[in-house]
Image (cartoon, rainbow, N blue to C red; front, side):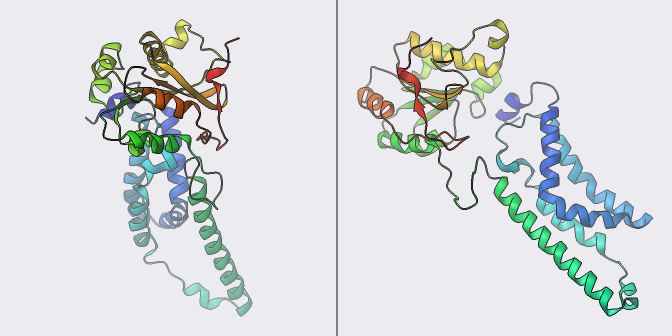
Length: 307
């Protein structure tokens, strides 16, 4: 099976994913759902309608088996749109509109205006969904979304080709734009971590990453609570392992970016390689780091003392 399945499908049934999948399917296919209602006009048409709905609802329901992480903009359900597009025309075949000939001119005009209004509503709905489904996008006027991980990736790209390794929970923008070798510490793109159930100190020792970066919900102002219940949470336990590994091996805490101390990005830099001092300086002094979920300019909490 693909590596992500081991990370996203090993916790039983995911009812939140199921609910999100059905809602995403409705949002993406609502115009065709309205047409599908016409398919229940007769016994024969109902059979055909159910035959077309089974693969759509079946595919949408299958996401109960995996977590909904990384489903930006309902992209997991995009495949249902072409299926819906191919399915609706047979459902309206055979409709009889002869009753329109019996309407007066005023009634015809009213139906015509109502049809224009319905078409306009569907166009508006489609446009609105196109905007609101974009990941973290705050305005339809700007296609670019400010994200500090993008800018950090561009900064690290200066060191591309030097064999540097970054271990990160954010194994998307950072590895892509930096060109660095990446360890996806969550394991969606790493066979060992996916099959092992989590990252280990021994695995980190194999690569000795030059930068360790992770996202979690604490900071020096809001220290992590190392309770047994918290450490049992896989994400929290993973970031604490990364944090402890970095501090035990002499990494320098270059930055803790966040627009609040409750949601942050940690950047640790190994202190013993050629470009370490320059990288520490560049990361710690970085001003353009916008937090992805809010678009707000981040504060570097690395210099704040713990309470």
